[in-house]
Image (cartoon, rainbow, N blue to C red):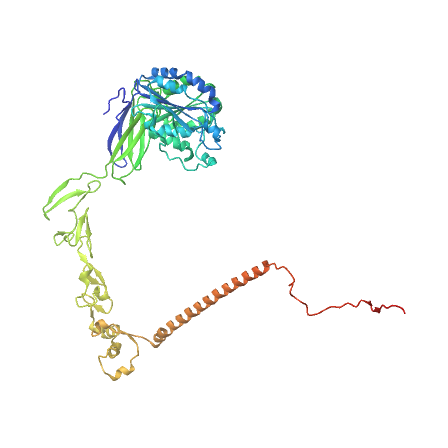
Length: 600
């Protein structure tokens, strides 16, 4: 078991338990906030124009921030980065003059990896300048994701408490906002920056390829990377970020009001750290198959309303919890892992091994059969020797059945409590068709019963002598000669009176027990006429279908022609080569029927 100390705050760190489905397994968990526990603090600051006076204040507080961390723990590291917005229109001015001056906009810029060198931190902080963007929301969430994911670049340590201070005076763009600038690919949740860090700034260059992350994306990465966010915002944005904080409470987020010039940032850091270390919050991830995980405080100083969260815990105060794990079923008989994050303290893991069977013992050698008997079943309630016997053998022997938990599991055609019965013993050896009871009775455990009258016998094969007339009628005796005529076995004048068609069973025609069935004239007519009628109906149906198809095609073609004619517009022009066949001549002296002349 892990011993609580300066670097171990959770004991045990790994728990291996075995659980039966439906039962509960308990163990005790201890948590103690360690004194002087390593701390990594990364400051992510808004450097858009509206934050100008805050940058001036922040530059004067570099050493004071380090002193504040030193009062918390001597093993601390501090880093710095800033953000403006995507370097894409319409978020920022993308004219050449705006992108080449000294305060040109950028998306996210990493300036100082986590370091204990306060001189380096201060010098890099003094080099920061204000930039600008064009819309009200900023692009801080792009930087937020990269700080969480680029572990090597940022310098997050494994055994340290991780704090991310995010300070701004405006809202942030989220998933979907990138469409306005033509950026539509979802954020890939991977580090997209060069992990090689020197003394130069490292800028996020994938701003034009991937959209902003969502609040859910950020919450998931905070959980996976064990980082606690501190949201420091101005009073006019407090309501908005308080709503964001509600979504991030499961990962230990806190929100605080930032003074107009960020002058109270030291108090925010100190109070947020105190809130984290004095509160124990559990964040488990339950796999399929685990029905419940209960964490019950034993000696919590102050239990909150959810019944799990413990607050008021002091440095080096040990708080114990009872952890109860219940398994739902044995659907997956493999070890399951339950990671449980304790916000700000680390993670412990529960390895659950399901118990899905009993380790049954052997019950010894059975003297009756000379076999080794053993128990089996989910509760060892079964053995392989308590079954019925046939011919002094369990279930009739290995060829007939197997003993399974007090009952015989019969093989092949065998059945019965001891697999003592089989239909094969009811088949007449003289029946060439191999029918059970010659098809005239029912096999009841190796014996034919219920033979159809007038048949009797072991296989229902014999007809009683007193009812030969009924036997002859039943066996189709009147048609035997005609059947032999059809097969050419006899040359008898009686053949001329036989029907022309027969249905014959030639398998056993020599025996009077199987006779042909004679077709009546009506049956013969039905056989001949029925196929002709069916063929005629099919032919008529095909002909009507073809005629209908041609009719529909001609109708569609006519409608298309009529539409084209209706749409046509023809201009009326005279043919210059055309000469009319008639000529009109006017009489110059004719006027309404009177002839005008000159008086003499």
